Image (cartoon, rainbow, N blue to C red; front, side):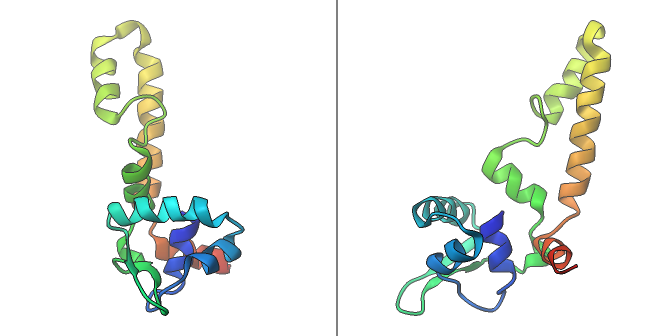
Length: 127
């Protein structure tokens, strides 16, 4: 998310890995692996050459934090995915209250992350 935030602050330009690494105090090798995953997920594109680097594949306001987290880390639920939690709520009466709470946590998290874009994140960092 740190790399995407840096790229979101340069929407029209290309940013080199070394510049992102320096700004975010991240090891370049670690960042290379992350950017490769983000490229495979089509959040970023890479450009080769002397003026090469990475840039977002879409405008920052069109990329939600929820979308990124799901693609990189999987489901947002703290325990299984939303569908599995719904199934447990309906099939496990003994633990239904716990699964309802976990589903509520997942749904609240999803609402926040799905309605927060990279652009929103950048605006918050300026305040």
